[in-house]
Structure formats: structure tokens, C-alpha cells
Amino acid sequence: MIESIKAAAIRSIGDELAFSFPQVLDVIKQCSINDIAVLGVEVNKPRGELFQTEYLSGYEVPNGLGIKDWKSYVQTNNSLAETFIRQHPTDAELFYLLAATHGGSSFRFKQ
Image (cartoon, rainbow, N blue to C red; front, side, top):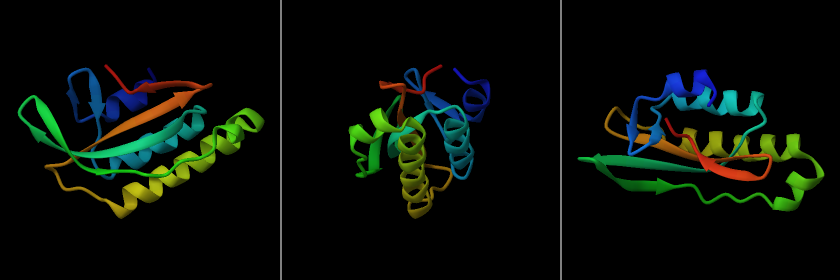
């Protein structure tokens, strides 16, 4: 786990790291620097130990681009993630969860 990403988390939901606005934009930048593609973004509202998804990104970049040019794949995904986040800024009550991939292996940011 990249320490700057872990440090940006405001809480954990189960073992997944949750991020606030606008700090999540810095997380996206750190992902880009570290060749991590953000595949999807969720905006969630806490419900005790659980959460309710308020918004879910719907962008999709063809996997073939990642095989041909990983840097372009990362840049395209992360640009789309940033656009989605800017279109769905949150207040203190809501948070973001990110799905990502590094080298073709999908993951969630966890503790």
C-alpha cells in the first residue's frame, strides 16, 4: 500500500479505505504517479458499520488499451475518475471508495 494513499483515508468501511472530497483528487494523482488505474468510483453514505451507495461511476475504458499502452490506460481511467468526482463533490457525510488495477490485477484500497 502506498503510504500517502493510506494516510489520505478518512475512515475504513470493513477493510476498505474511504476518502473525502477534495482529498480523493490527491489520491487519484498518487495513483497516476504509481501507474495505478482507477477503474471505478463509488460515492457512499454511512449506515452504521455498513454504507449505502449514492452514486456509481459508469465509465469504461477498453482493456485492450492497457495491453497496448499501460500509461495511456492509467491516464484515461484516472482522468475519467477525476471528472466523475468533480461532478459528484461530497460533503462531510459522504465518502468515496475506489476500485483500481495495477498491471491487470484488480483491487480495492484496503488497510
